[in-house]
Length: 487
Length: 95
Image (tube, rainbow over all chains, first blue to last red; front, side):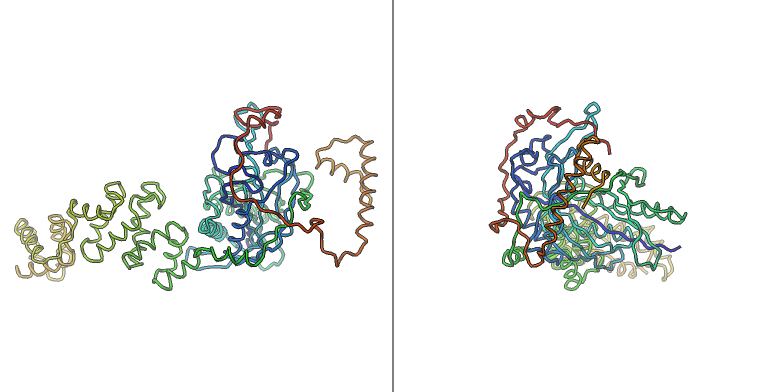
């Protein structure tokens, strides 16, 4: 039977506020256990939550970025369950009146095509603490530093049809929240986590099949792999005539399989009710418009601008626009050299290679965007050829240079990379090469006319070796002229 | 609306309450009475009434995003049954 895959994602993104959503404790990552857990976070009796205005502003910003309806009146609810890392016995979240309503984003697929994916809603809630099961002599250690960190939970419509689309959606959301500066996007620290709802149905069938939920997947690659593994598992069961059990599963990246997490005898009953400690949050149009005025250019508009105004291919544009800092670097250099395509090739080629090799982020690269712009300008005005430019760039990436633009000129001089375009000077070098290599010249002259284009190669190599930075086009012209004079 | 005994057991379980059979019967009666009262309230037509969040129509106040709490771990952990290396210890939880 042919099956259709149905995927919906719930993404939790930690908001980059300084303090918690309902208390004045710090949210900084990596602090010693429980040093950032105050009386409110601990759920001690007699405390009251006070809502962090920055968390509200960030959520509204997100809503506007995905063209969503903003809830002018949103309400906090209590979701009740017992777990040691949730000391209050409930999570404060939003059930019926979320801050962000229906919206949508555009995802980019590998072939450069795009698709709209609708977002059902996004709501504010608090994160729980962390449980550590190892190292406490059979007990569990609880660290409540994370408890009360503001989260925005973004719920998609079940509109994705394969694992690649789901990964593209997660990537795009990552790109949007980091562009907005509302989440640091650090997946390795759990700043963004993804729950994947997966089900299968016979192609053509309207109603959804039974779904499972893969909890807490924390990388783009694992979203794709976990969903693929789960699709395969479900398909095997269904093909054998079995039934899918609705359950929560975990992805084991080492074994590349999902396994059931917990089966509850009693169905989850969170007994939601409006939080009596928090009043409805009311915002007006003026507030929303003020936030709207602070929106930066977002990845989709940037990508379209790169394609429409600067002639980049959709795939190149999508890659460059996906990361805010990379896009900024690229565009700064591109503007300086006034050549977006040249800059795009460099950023995706040598710059990306250097980032991988040095294992640094774009902001830590020793070659600044201004410096790259300068190097590329030197290619444009024929001071450097492409090879010479690569050598300067690599030298600077490896730390030979400083923050100045002048250091580029110094390096070009000291490395002897300045391109020689003066044909008189090149003629002298070529003459020397021809004199020094009589056997090669003999061989060349013995080569039939139609094979000479290839036979000229060694001379070019020798000339460029003799003088780095010679303009290859001029070398070619001079060599052809000189050799034809010889016969 | 009358609750059956199993529903009372489920509710007790969710609330982590241990009840014996006598108490189950007692809670079954009491909780059912409360639900009957709610049923009476539900009978009133409230379709034209705005839900009331606060008697004075107050709305949520906001707090500036500033760190105002300092580390008081030692103080808070004095009332914890067991701690180690700054962690609160609880009976092992395995997922």
